[in-house]
Amino acid sequence: MKVYFNSHDKFYKNPFGAVKTDDLAEFKISIADTTAPAEVFLRIWQNNAEVLHKMTLISEINGEFTYGATVQMPPAPMLVWYYFVIHTADNRTFYYGNNAEYLGGVGELSTEPPQHSYQITVYDKDFTVPQWFRDGIMYQIFVDRFAKSCRGGILPPVEKNILPKVRYRNWNEPMQFHQHPFENGYAANDFYGGNLEGVIEKLPYLKELNVSIIYLNPIFEAYSNHKYDTADYKNIDSYFGDNETFTHLCKEAEKFGIKVILDGVFSHTGADSLYFNKYGTYGENVGAYRDKTSPYREWYEFGDGNSYQSWWGCTTLPNVKELTPSYLDYILRSDDSVVKLWLDRGASGWRLDVADELPPEFLKILRREVKSKDPNAIIIGEVWEDASNKISYGAQREYLLGGELDTVMNYPFKDNVIAFVLGHICANTLHRRMMRIFENYPRDCAFALMNLVGGHDVVRLKSTLGEMYDDPNVPKYDKQFWKLSPEAEALATKRQKLITLLQMTFVGVPCIYYGDEIGMQGLSDPLNRATMKWSDGDSELLKYYRCLTKIRRERDVLRRGEYKTVYAQDGVFAFVRFNESEKILCIVNRDNEDREVRLDPDCEKLVSLIDGAVESSKILKIKSLEGNIYELYD
Image (cartoon, rainbow, N blue to C red):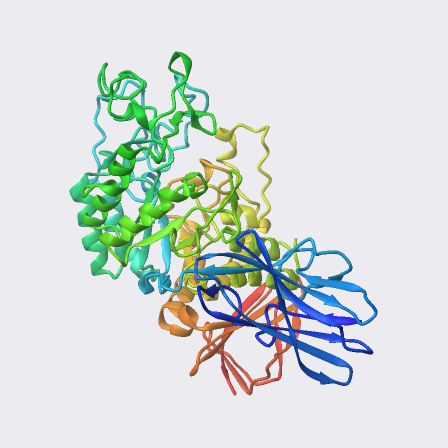
């Protein structure tokens, strides 16, 4: 007996992928055998209960029996799981479920219930994501290291803070790595002076890069240079400017067609903060640590001897109890709550730090409050895995069911395209892993995924692609001077162009980490947070980025068009983005030798959108470590 089902093929499952609440989903399965099965069932698991739907015979052609069933999805958002049960005429039972890799598509036949079921994400039928975000190109800025303006933040000669801070005189000075004076670990107390006025002055540069969304790492008052240790949620750090500077930035950015998104760190605050005040910066009897009657005391979990719970053991980052009513009011619910206040001041949305660690109810309230203030504000979660079925702290999360996030950071995209370009996986594996995301995510969410390939938490893209080894035994001070050899950098640049081509043509919103577009290098943080190299970056790589971002900006089909993989073998990966009037082919060859590809479907003429070259052969020749974007003409 041969059985076939393919969840990626609309003949077998329609609609493809995630389904809206109350909508109908059609299933078919083909069984080739000498006799028809006695019974075929579609086994659905939802709400912790099993439902068997008997499938009916649709057709019989030359010993192949096709069975079908139509099932209405539940009225409430949830994950639904399914596989097939086949009872043969001779009293045997077979099961057909998801494949061992849990990637969807073609499954596997077994005599035992399958290890992996197929997933259907049933999401709220009213769920939508703002179109402006889906159409955008993002640029991530670590403010202290991006651009410095003499009209910017205040670097006072005398600190109000009892902890010393280091201010570099020169933009290109080596980093210093100071031990925190009172806690374990790196102090992150060194500053180069990048500020919001510097960002304003670089808006023309970002416009030339066709950026339409700026994502700022945290900018609220905080002790560190990274600002993930919030000291005051309602004020801009004086090193970066002030609240009026931020509003001015948003207004100036809007003139360039650019919106600004903020980083919200709501699972913990800084120990050196208005709320906690461990070191007395804000007065002797102020804050939860020093005053047991403080209104902020109930935000934190204290133990014996004023010990407290902190984020992953980092004592500079005390955890908050997010569902404390006064905290909910302060951050979310009040008329002047943090999330609303910054929307009023010009922000267009939030990226939520460590969304895994924010309770579901907190996220639901956040969405309700943010959308009530501005329905077009975007909400992005930091989730490193498949966010549709993420289990966090023993609970199934509901990020993408329509009541919490709009979308997430697409770390699977980053991991898989890098693995492919480095030769760790083949093109077919890349295709299947990408299809798993498409299958599991609501369509609006998939088209709004934050497709990053670099960022402040990972090794710089150029260093990764040059396969620089981050030796843990070498001090960070020494490693900041490491550079790829000329040969390794040349190879890394070719690989980076392949990844950038994929990033700028794929479904989702491409996000450029500042400096990647000029080939900056750097190992794990903070080495990936060096100052922007305004005077000595790779101008040819920047030109390539500008070319690809311009193509994406000008071609609606690359932002909104449908997607189909058309070739995925060995080191060659190709897909088509298409709509009713346009069809564009994107193809890359990561191999070290030239390849020939017969296109499926064939076309009469291909015109490169990068260099204007015209191809008319049915066989497309693609050089080693190169890629291209073609408009297809039938």
